[in-house]
Image (cartoon, rainbow, N blue to C red; front, side):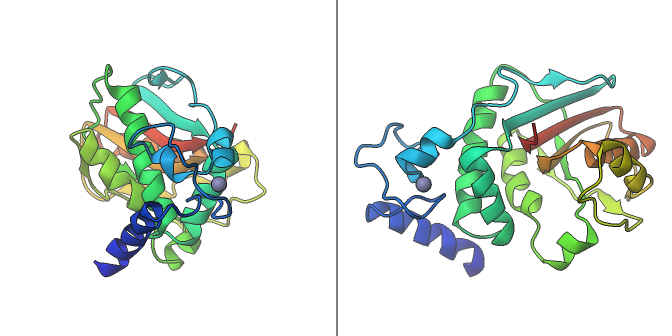
Length: 229
Ligand SMILES: [Zn+2]
């Protein structure tokens, strides 16, 4: 519990003392915040300007696959990218807290007019390498996002096949590499939301979707924090 509370507390104390940017940690926060109570107030002027514009403006986007809706929040660029890299290094640190606040605000803005039917939110399971590193970023960011949408967080998918690292592979190779890698532990809910931090080629999400459908899901939604353009 303390591991979770301490970085958050330090983060907010730091802000109160007029401290430094939550992203680069190098530049002081501006004297006059631009957004009242917004997470952007934890960023210096440079990192604020460097935050990417929302991915695919407007509401959720339908994908080519029937019954699947994809919602990416931002492109994997600029200060968001730096914040995600930091959060992966220290999953329960201040960068994760800042990301949670950013995701919260962005989901509220995007989904206010779009009822989101996938009430069970499921993380795309981590690779063995990521699992070895302990905490896993989607499991730090996803539960709060699920709760905000009136949903429930559930670890339904698991890795049933360990595959070589995906780094350096193109989309087709990643798809082949991941074939049969995931399975649902029980019968899947008919509508669910798959959550991931970064979408590179979409191969993991596709394979996770296939596994969920094989276990009975008919409507699969994707929510991804950052999309590699
Ligand atoms: Zn900064």
